[in-house]
Length: 521
Image (cartoon, rainbow, N blue to C red):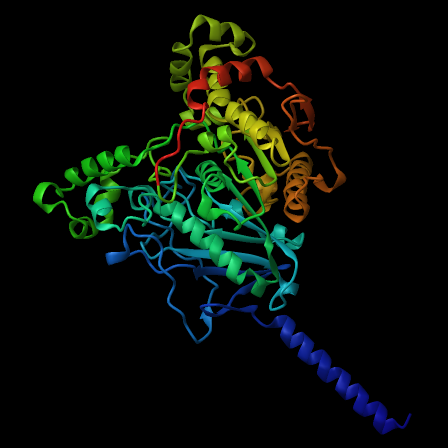
């Protein structure tokens, strides 16, 4: 070959290489149905933050179903975290949802963390949609422990949305009911937001390389309870292919529209909207801070409302009757869910004080103290018992897997009585290094536990079966075999785990688990 030809080919090659390098250095981009977005690279991931999936629920849109987001034509910079939905926050310490930061009613946004290589090419990358916890009154999509970069590293897209909280997200009032049409859903605006985000994923995730037919919804605490409600809600069907419920309970009695309206009217009265002034416009004119100051935020205070339109039954009713969506399911709980009662022993001891003699007899192995007894009863009644019961019901129609997370970091052993509520999250996300100040304290044992839990979630998202990267067998749950995977030290399969205690809790909850009629549409 002649020297000039060599030189031209070399220059062409260098030019192509330069183009490739420039593209590799470019900010990641995607085009969705509302317009183009520009994100930021983070290691193996392309991260897009605060993408609107619905219109801001402000003014006349407060306490209405989510409306479509306004489109845009120029590049939208999706590189900065958006504000969380209104909640009580402290400037110096995270609230009960782990959040400290700005809030705004203009909060219906979501974050996408995707493998960089799939952008712009409709692909088959599995998708996980995260619903955070915080009692449906607190929390946000972008906490450090929710850092999804390692999911992207392992070939999974994670979408995390903000949704309306507290009395702005789960609220009913006779004036709002009178204003609504006969078919308009009422009350559960936070759940409506979650459905709108899932619909956004269905329409747009291919732009990030994702497979809209391979979506796993997963949530923790209130997010887990909301995931159970999505499984029981007809309008959410077809929006996800499988589900994971982390510490989501499941035995709560349905919250009726009449109950929610009475509560909403009482809240409005405390804010001066009563009698002749009790109309929808007066409600929507209330300042956000006044609503936050007036609402109560105790455990289980806010959640989905059975309005007979969007929601016709509670998760317990749906699973009892076999009405819940039949999709592969992972469900489980932690060994110290009673951390929800607070750090002192008094609240746990108060739970034990209500125990009848028959219950005390079954719980004798857990009764080293009144506080220990109360914690064990709370764990089983609120989280462990519901998880086992739902796994059994779900397994009749689709595969289900049950877990128990008991791993406690070595430095906390002897200090904590078990795995606190929500402590499994950084293991599931493999985000131990993202939690500020934690990296120097992480031990090889912790990293191994995170690798195991994360691999189980990744494999489930890929295939609908938690193969756990070949690290640990995890048999599907059946009531007869009654086997779960304990994420402990060591991890392993346990059969008939706490059977006597959980059987008793199920018997005590029998009146709530009989099904009962659904609400009339």
